[in-house]
Image (cartoon, rainbow, N blue to C red):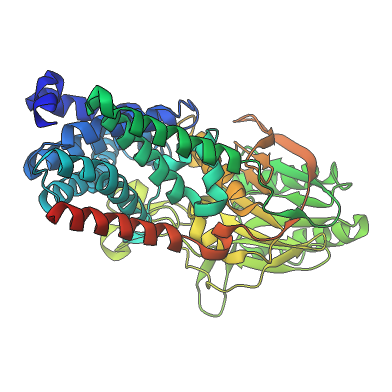
Length: 506
């Protein structure tokens, strides 16, 4: 195998480094809005290929280059948030974005170093073991680690890219990390197919076909069942520009816009407003604006879910919240806060340095983990605010009690970038993992009604005041992923890594 790899001149020296960089830069094409999901197999396959016989130092460098390309392209929208809406100059925005990309690139870099250090390729057999067992398991393990370390950032997990591919059938069983493992394993099989002798190529090909066939058949299983009758819903996208949203002179226009759009849809069972739709604290509008809205909602038999900040006047803490109005009133306070968006780490040192660290409403406190589920139209709903729904293990905390999932988001921070379609893709995966419909309402797009199979029923255009109307069927029941979470995948990863280690020592 080593001789064959050496014969591939483009995997050696600086050519191998360049190949790793280009492979990483191509990987975001597998995700929304491009949806070229086979690239999520091809790009890691190229990385595995240039790692296979690399030294630990070389593997670290190539892993970092792969990560720099992957995150440099895939999360370029960070620059938009810092420069366009954080009011920072170009140099500062490039520096902060580049620093974040460089940090995230350390994950594949450290992965490459550890795998080549702990699992040296001593011969043809050990290279095959490392390729088929260790690389896919270690890749998935590092995605999982990235989802929680330093509050977590599970963006561009390769499992997300497979929402429209046969591997989507694994989502209700093993969640996004099961899909990532299957995708990385498919990449390893592709490399194995390339490197194997002609007489040995049937086995990886057969394994690939079996894996994808089984996953494709799983797509047709109905894991959950309808609960009650379908509900009529209206999702209101106000399209208030981020750069004027918090200005005092804009506040009254915003209040009038949302209530005017709501009055046109009183025939709905549920009306939803996006994250921080009201640019004012709850207590400032509770006795007038919201009281009138509550009365009208009860008169028409409609329930509302409204995004707004809530100030605890006793403690001085304030929360990024969604409240219910109508048949019952309650609050959900966002738990998983976004650093530099919802709060500023080390704020005593950072605030005042640049405009990005002094954004309006960037001092939220986290809500409690075990909050009572809000109830609308006779159904309990699982609420997530903004990027909380990219964490599948947090969404399932509300299940199986919740029959609907709601995500209220403010995507106005990211303009016309890759972030809104990427986020929508992850919302689709939450529906597929849980067997629940997702109502996703955003400030300026992309709002959507998503069915329990992860398919978009209807969606809004971006940068337009728009109201999505449609029906949604509440669901009951439990998928295996809801029941067991990430535990089965983590156990499988441990078994694969352990088996690879023991077999490699023999």
